[in-house]
Structures are given as structure tokens and as C-alpha cells.
Amino acid sequence: MYFIIFVLLEIEKLDDVILAWKTAGVSEITILPSASQVRIDEKPALQEDFPLIPNLEDIFEEEERQNRTLFTVVKSDDMANAVYKATVSIIGDLSSSGKGSFIVLPIQKAYGVNIQ
Image (cartoon, one colour):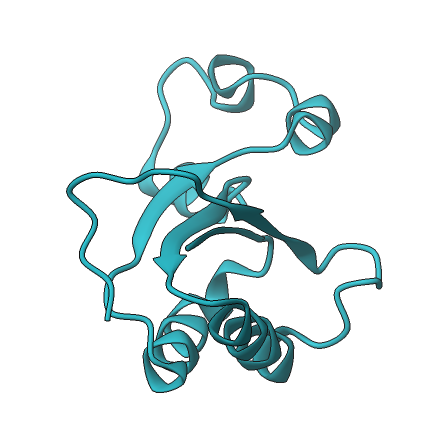
């Protein structure tokens, strides 16, 4: 079994990545909002971003600074490779800066995990 972690920087592509993973055979995906230290350093903290009394325009003009981190467990190395290829088909070459990080880790034991 393998644990896949993918940090998606282009969150507008989230639905496409989920569909690609499901098409590749992934049965369960956990998705968490996340923020890299680099993005946090680029922008001051939230309380400094907004005026004392914000209006709706101030809130909606603010660019979202969060990423999405996707987790899943797959049965085989072949399946991990299929998920990687599905991800690259949506995101593009991950060696390019600003695309995200895709990590595959072997699992020695797992409980309560449903994989096909």
C-alpha cells in the first residue's frame, strides 16, 4: 500500500484533479485547506489585510491564499503511478515552479482504510 499526498496550488483545478483520480481508480480522497509558509510570507496576516470595518467588496477582492492538500491510499505502485499520471494530465509538469508537490510513501500498516 502507498500513501499519496498532493499539494495543489491551483485550486481552481481541484474538481478536475478529483475526477482524474477517481477515473484512475481512487475510491476515497481526503481534501484539506492548507497554506505554504511561502504564501504566508508573501502576504501579511488576515487581520492586517482587511480594513477595520470591511465591506463585501474588500472581502471578495482578496485573492485566496490557500492551497488544497489531497490524501489517498492506493494498493500498488502501479496504482500510485496511475494517480501521478492522472494528476500531471490536469496540472502539467510538476517540476515547474508553482504547480504543487506530489509525494508517495510506502505504508507498512493501515487500519480503517478502504481501498480496492
